[in-house]
Image (cartoon, rainbow, N blue to C red):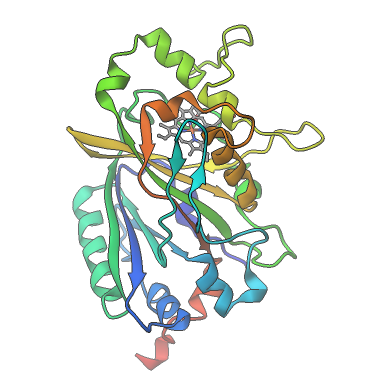
Amino acid sequence: VIVPQSGIFAVGTSAHCFLEFTCHDGISAAELVHALADLEAPHTTVGGTNLVIGVRPSRWEQLRPDAMPAGVHDFDDPIVGIEGFSMPATQCDGWVWVAGAARDGVFDVSKAVIAAMAPVAGVTTEATGWAYQHSRDLIDFEDGTENPSLSEAPEIVLVPAGQPGEGSSVLLFQQWSHDAAAWTALSDEQQEKVVGRTKDGSIELDDATQAPDSHVSRTVIENDEGVELDIFRRNVPYGTVTDYGTMFIGFSFEPERMTRMLRRMAGTEGGVRDALTRYTTPLTGAYYVIPEVGSLAAFATPEDDS
Ligand code: HEM
């Protein structure tokens, strides 16, 4: 049975920890994926904690070339845009997202994850995420309005049946730091022009008001037949009062969609830079394969061996 990693769709959690791992010298892809596959969320009956696990595309390819989602690759090169703007490439080997209802549970599980990974890999980046005003990001706009519903999301997120990597997904992971002073110096109306939606009600601006450099204008993409190409976003606010931003968490079975959005935001495609990039700066950027549960579990320590 093909089982996707369910945490991708587990919306509504308010406590998050994001960890990226880099392997120690000499650690093989098999050793890395074995350690990732052995991580297990505790089975609690109240307030469960989810794990979502990702593997560097080139490492997964070494082990399962037959189960690679089409078009996926490491985030090896920065996306160089116009006006000196660029998005860094900071690919790591493994990615773990711990999410739950309470900060203490997420903290404990994250510590256990780091300890379990320690023989093969160390933590390269860490971020603590939390829910702000239910579903707002820290520019104080609702995030996720145009997301597909949970019933539509699987067909956007998961590699379709019969294709290599069936039931797996590809994640784009970027940490964006906000320039709070510059953002809050704008009026509500100016902020709405940057995003392309209203602050209250998250209503899309009409064609006359929608600017070509708004975030909405840059991230709505279509195929050759004019059909909109969606992704599934699970963005999470992170940080402290003086240093905060957005963890961009995007899933699609077709990673080119996300690469195109990044190129359009940077102005590499279309020649217009997303106005949001004047107020938020990407600090990291990586792609991860999110393997289907069975294909990951195949690398875990067999239960009767322990
Ligand atoms: C600081 C980083 C970011 C912030 C704060 C942010 C925030 C937002 C907000 C407030 C919206 C409008 C509400 C909604 O439909 O969800 C939105 C829409 C969207 N964003 Fe972002 N975003 C960020 C980065 C990105 C990146 C890196 C991508 C793509 C790789 C992206 C793709 C999209 C897409 C596809 C939409 C929906 C457009 C539509 O169909 O109307 N965003 N974002």
